[in-house]
Image (tube, rainbow over all chains, first blue to last red; front, side, top):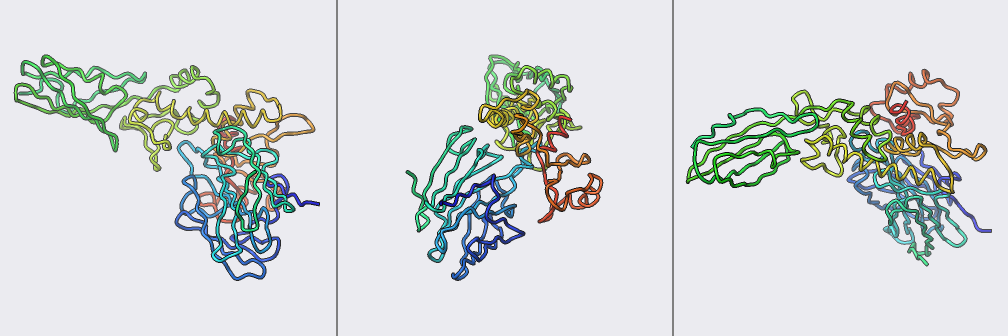
Length: 175
Length: 274
């Protein structure tokens, strides 16, 4: 039976506690922030420590730490799929002061250094991007992500759906 | 050659409407005149040139929607002179702004938001545009997209800029509330829009009741504009507002990692709309 993991509706596999998140297959990811990047130190089971820097965008303050990192799925020893969330940069009149910016990342850890093979904006107060209900599902059996936006990133303020199969090297394949 | 009118550093005032007065310039020379003008305020600047057959020129048409320092260099018959005058603003009344907003479709709730945030003030005590620490200008504290010179000095254009952002949040609110064919009231749309302005959704779907309801798990600190607690957090559960406020108020100025309070659009909408 395929294992379906739904983001935002069903509790995610792992939730960041402080500056560290646990991988479902064992190991952990430590994270820090600087120069508009999030730095991950990945200790996957049976692998040496790996480091990768993740770029954010202009909706996130340069020094912001992730307010949340959730592991969406894994291809053990090869690929980690996670969602990192940050407070939005606020504008005048408290615009987006309580908002957040959410990124989906697919990170290939098969080789050193790890490589980010996919980055997608899942949610954004500043850009009016929002997941629908259910928002995202990871089917581990077919290594497939299904994402359903109420307000998608490609078409301004319109629903959007994407199905992305993740290859063993982390490369995204869309039908 | 001398400029007879106006006098150096004369002050001109934009009305609350807003309306720009006549700026009558006159020299003691005869014949064709060329009027080179520059108006600036802070980092904003505009300039241009106009020619008149005689010694009279009204700058009103070129400075409408602008303010600050207006410098005019006039030349005629190989002579020239220059002068600088000042242009200041006048705040509209709350009734002026509210009346203007009633002419704008989809603005329901924006009047309360502007009142809450800037008390309808476009100009400071020196009658110059309000500027916040993060370079937010005017009544709507426009920052991004960066406001134009005109939006900084004309409060109606400033409100239009704020409304454009509000409209995008209203569109998001409509999409959210109408998903799966669900219905909503105009009041729910107003709360959802104002909440999204600050961040996040106000309502959640109550399947049993078949209706949108305010997020039930959020308790707000009425002493703040948008700080609340998630009452499903074991650290908050069962505690009163007074107890939570006493525990957390000392950290409101700088939210520490692992805090059990958060900035909440739900609390913001409650504070703004009541």
